[in-house]
Image (cartoon, rainbow, N blue to C red; front, side):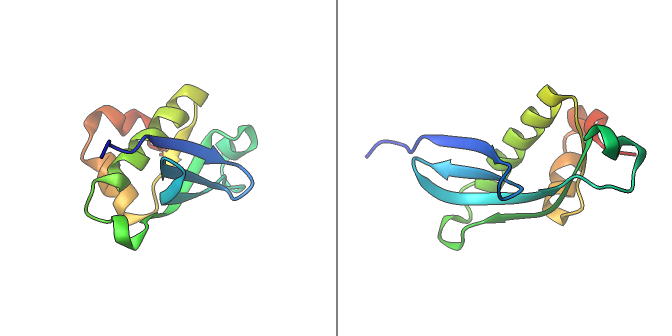
Length: 104
């Protein structure tokens, strides 16, 4: 059996990023653009309040793949992250090369 094709996409309709293995949703992260910060008007700050892997897919490293896709997308858009979710915070904290993306 071949490895699934993994893809992280931003779904603006549901305000989240999704990780799919082929066509199956295996994880997602909710995102919010806060309205109370100076950067909010420009859409530069994205809060990640929740990251989840579908139960039957946990333990496969999918949450890390999802976060990697999120930070790549945010960097390409010139946005910063406010990782409220404990997993998102730990992911960023463990990678000094991503600290420049942190919202102050």
